[in-house]
Image (cartoon, rainbow, N blue to C red; front, side):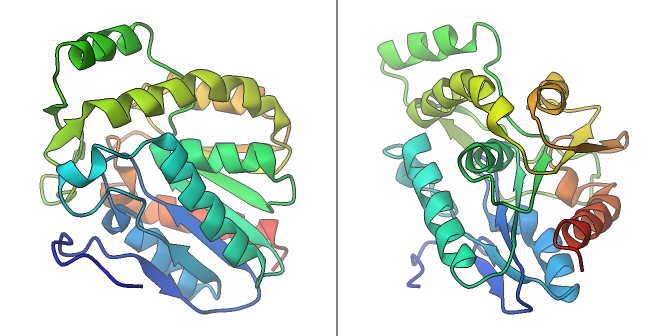
Length: 252
């Protein structure tokens, strides 16, 4: 694919051709594939075919994200899932934050998915936040302070946008408000990864997800890391747990 000239270094989509089973790996809101590269590489090393796409509006500058919304990101996730499923015996989907919400959404629509890994996933709307964001939109505000790089390890920095686009944030919150009703449709096995010290997504989202899905649930609790656990102190544990889960879900 043609990449934008102003792509943030390291934010490019990443893929690897491997065996007959595929894994789709989805990054979070205002982030990019950099935050999921380690998981992608670990899965590829285990023999999976891996696709880590760059979601619309991400990985360049915040102005590119302002006209996008949840429908665009879900559409891209669906497109990549379909392409991977067409050439794979089994597919596992992995997502961080909003990517975890997209993972759950795909799981609610595709019971054939072999397994879902939801990492600090957004699956509910924080009480009252939509009203606050709507006030900002009504006041003509199009961006606010960034929410990226919530990482405990001082040596790790996420190349997420420094600002948060307000209208896209509203679209994500609106989707999260309806996602809870979809969770009971999920029958695939689910690995729920939760950071106990998350300053972006309340850990109660993980509890809700684990309680509402109808498929078998496994949990990994990360006590040393913040929201972007895939780049934090528990990075190796998350990668190992994801690979092990994917192998078992595809019976390899």
